Image (tube, rainbow, N blue to C red; front, side):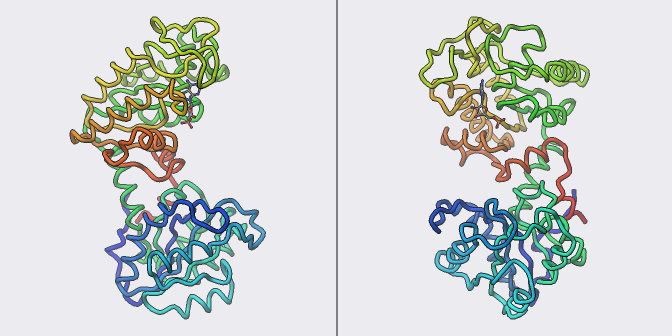
Amino acid sequence: MTFRNLNELELKGHRVFLRADLNVPISDGEIKDATRITETMATLKFILEQGASVVLCSHLGRPEGVGFEAPYSMAPVAAWLEDKEGLDCRLASAVTGEEVEREATALKSGQVLLLENLRFDKGETKNKPEFCSALARLADTYVNDAFGSAHREHASVAGVVPLFPKDRVAAGFLMEKELKALGTVTHNPKKPLVAVMGGAKVSDKIDLIRNFLGKADAILIGGAMSYTLLKAQGISIGKSRCEEDKLELASEILAEAKEKGTRLLLPLDHVVAPEFKADSPATVTDGIAIPDGQMGLDIGPETIAGYMEEIKNAKTLIWNGPMGVFEMDAFATGTLTIAEEMAKASDQQAFVLVGGGDSVAAVNKAKVAHRISHISTGGGASLEFLSGIQLPGVKALEV
Ligand code: AMP
């Protein structure tokens, strides 16, 4: 995976098409959390400081794709860039078109033109050639900083890229940071490599597990997906969540793990309750089986102790998916303890990568996010990358 870095590009006097992730939560025209804007500022400001102008763009929410819709307008983002970041930024009159081309051509160095929401035009999500060409006409240089959108075959991250000269295409700083961190885990990671995987469904994580069989020294499984794997081995799981149609697949994975020499660890005990409710009386099972009438909602203390030991000994760790129903306090101990142990490993120089929406929420809940080596901003994109799937937005940047 080789791509051009932003600081390898001559930028002075150029007009740069910057695809960023500015998909911030907005209600009543007000930005509720500007994290995504802030995260891409290093890239944006660097380009401007080099004496270039920027045609900036992003999607925002899920408009219909049939034209302008006020609740999804980029106007609040343009205002934020002017007022809070002090940039010389104006909002384009549309996404593409002759008027927008005039606005782009009029840009002077140091100025930003923010395009309207890319998804106002169906051409974006459908990766339509005419839309790609219309975007490409707006600038001479292409920079992608939107890692979180790299798994989508959309115009602004995929189709438009080959329309720029190969030597005028680069990854932004945020994209570069993500790709380097993910690369640390997938290409020659320091061993032992331990992957912690949890969450609701085996079916969502099959590719992820498979991609680490033979690569990871151990995979520690938690969350509801462990019950499908336990049941596949003939262990009683009471009324725990289970994907009956995936039992065969679960058996295959267990066999494949043995064959490829990766230890696939499943919970040895569980926190159970009769109902999926925050106040349902929680007890710890005596061993691996779950009694009838009970459902597994978190990993138990013996499991936690075993997993902590594995995490302590690892040099590279990835984590995707919670160990239990961490949204409910009674079933959050497994997830929060693993989060703390991940932070300790990171303090001790192990490389720890946390990816996927819910595990990011878990490290935030455990208040250890600042201690983790790398937290991936793109949930879907990092899951696909770690599953060994080539991301269209990354492939497009390859030199
Ligand atoms: P995912 O999006 O696949 O990572 O799954 C995350 C969701 O799985 C969270 O909302 C958890 O509450 C849920 N989850 C984790 N463990 C369990 C469990 N034992 N039973 C039911 N849901 C669970």
